[in-house]
Length: 356
Ligand SMILES: Nc1ncnc2c1ncn2[C@@H]1O[C@H](COP(=O)(O)OP(=O)(O)OP(=O)(O)O)[C@@H](O)[C@H]1O
Ligand SMILES: [Mg+2]
Image (cartoon, rainbow, N blue to C red):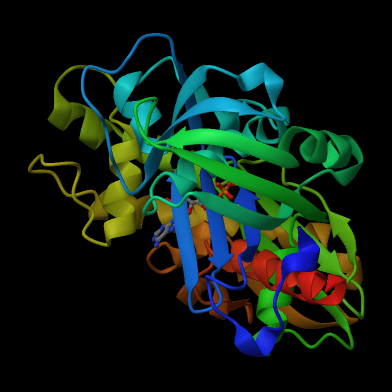
């Protein structure tokens, strides 16, 4: 496969069909970043999967979720099985779909599913050739498993069983430690001085992870905090007494609606006449201060040697976070949610170029 690549100067999707691709399968959101030679494609879906045991009544489509039927290929265990991913899984089975946030091991098991789901949001192609760099929080545990479950040739119908088939050829170029992609991205933006130590904080869905990189960029410390990530804040808002009183059912609100309200920047709770901003403003400072205090303590022994202090992860995109971090001299990278996937794609491009 690799030998068919054309020289870089004649770059185009048709004649250079192997796409360097970064895959960041987060506990909450799967981010896929692909380089088609002409432009960068970014696909984001929630990290949810549902196996369909009966045909759908009608086709479902969403930019944030996918649908595929596995016809044949190297994953023989998936043959003749059909799945929804992301938002579509949550639409169809709100309570029984698999959430990758439930168990870290699920990420390795379902990364191929979420990747097919992501591809199904794109226009049909007969063939994809992907050269992947995937991140994992434990290479020791998941390196071999991730490769074994993902590598190979897969014939699928993206969008559902009755759709034309697509061959997806996948080579896993490397399994990178969590944070390597974000480091590469931040370095390219000159936000990290790689001649000295760098301290980073990854504000994710399930976790907040302080990370320390050596001069030259090797990961030397990576330990999720005991407290959770954005999900703790979303849960606290969803179960705030003010919202519960408004909803009038005695039950907490929907975490998904809270997430969407925050991400939109409008803070609306779904279509209801309730604005989450006052609750958010009340809770956000303590949420951040607690995590920052623990994160700074965990990385204390490297602080004096470090030259760069940065933050990434989707949580840094929440309103006010970057401003609050800057008061502690921590720089937030732009597009924090995408930082890792974009950097992984950069690593994939470099690895692929070396193989040509
Ligand atoms: N544009 C945005 N505005 C506000 N919040 C955002 C934005 N994008 C992402 N987020 C928030 O960031 C969080 C997801 O972050 P991220 O994608 O880094 O987590 P993850 O990688 O899925 O989780 P983990 O790192 O714990 O495995 C979600 O709570 C989401 O609401
Ligand atoms: Mg993450």
